[in-house]
Image 1 (cartoon, rainbow, N blue to C red):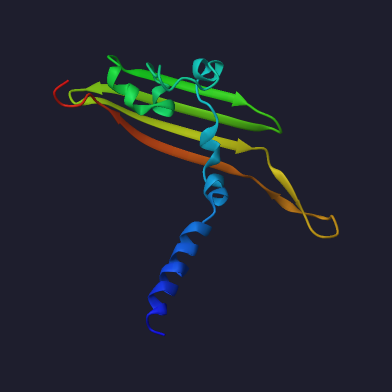
Image 2 (tube, helix red, strand yellow):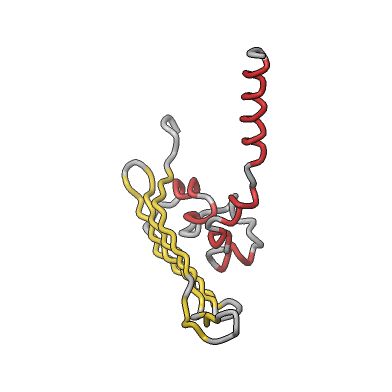
Amino acid sequence: MTSSRPMAVVLFLSAGLMSSSPILAGETASFLKIGVGARPVAMGGAYTAVANDINALYWNPAGLAGLGRRELGATHAEMYADTRYDSIGYVQPVAFGTLGVGFNYLSQAPLEGRDAQGRPTGGYTASDKAIGLYWGGRPSGS
């Protein structure tokens, strides 16, 4: 009976690892999938290989290594149902590559709460924020 116990533990742990749902993981910070920058969005998101301006912060931070000047960029989008998406970023070349910082903010209009009988219970708002620090540099020897 003791020889089957390690196998049961292995099966239990394997089942636990396989049952972790990628659907739940996909919901976290999904607002970061919203495209940033007019050019990358106009290219249908096929900007990862180009990534040669401030928008590299959001599409491919390795592209920062090729930037030779500082840049500031901002995006504002009015979306459906009174939803707004804003981002701002700044990059600065330094001796060891290019550093950047970016901030994203998704906000929605106030929503009205109601109880089971349909009576107003007050409103609430929903928003998401993210800040990122980025670095892009050339490998040593390049």
